Length: 285
Image 1: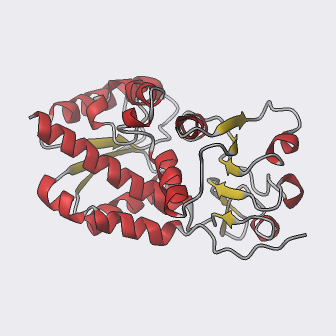
Image 2 (image 1 turned 180 degrees about the vertical axis):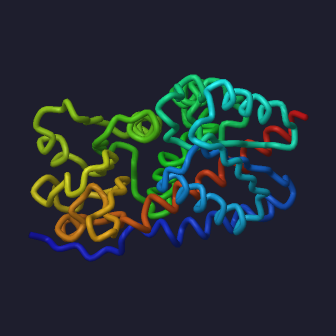
């Protein structure tokens, strides 16, 4: 067996670099990012805090609107409409998950696509299917993954890519973005029979399901590039991904750690989207 000793895909360092590279544009554009958090989900609070820290680093005007759990769907829709109409707001996010009494698709549909820096609106997702040129506001995690692969000069064109997970926020859009870059893409999910037969073929393996140690060393080939999007909390409170990092890393040419891989890249990509949305809005005003 060949043992590879490449550095992990360091999303933390690249994220800081990316955010810093946006500062001069941010100074000129003066974007304003608003995040609506409904309820007190601890994971949501942590994600919102990460976004705030990134905004502070980049110089983006950040505003958090914290609504309580009992906020009705109509009240939230009214808040969204208010932000749609506010010209000082260049981008905003409704942090997911939302309380069960609120219909998520309805809320996302209500967001002005031009201010949808999370990239979840059907208009922005639909444009992605056309070509890379129309990936104006793609979902932040897939954009972060593409930027991570590009930074390490990992060839995408002509490679066999396997994506495990078919969520609307990660699996489907990253499959589309890599297809746009001329990879051969297989998308697997909970109903895929014999997952390992697909993952063993992968030159690039992207895993985003939220199940610790789903991918083990016998499920990958030597030299594979592994991007682990999963974030799971162990009983001792520490974080891990969906991949058995210790053993898979011995076979991988590149592998992203959890934490410190895709997570920081998601936040950096959100800053990229925030700048892009502000730029388009300033040009059209």
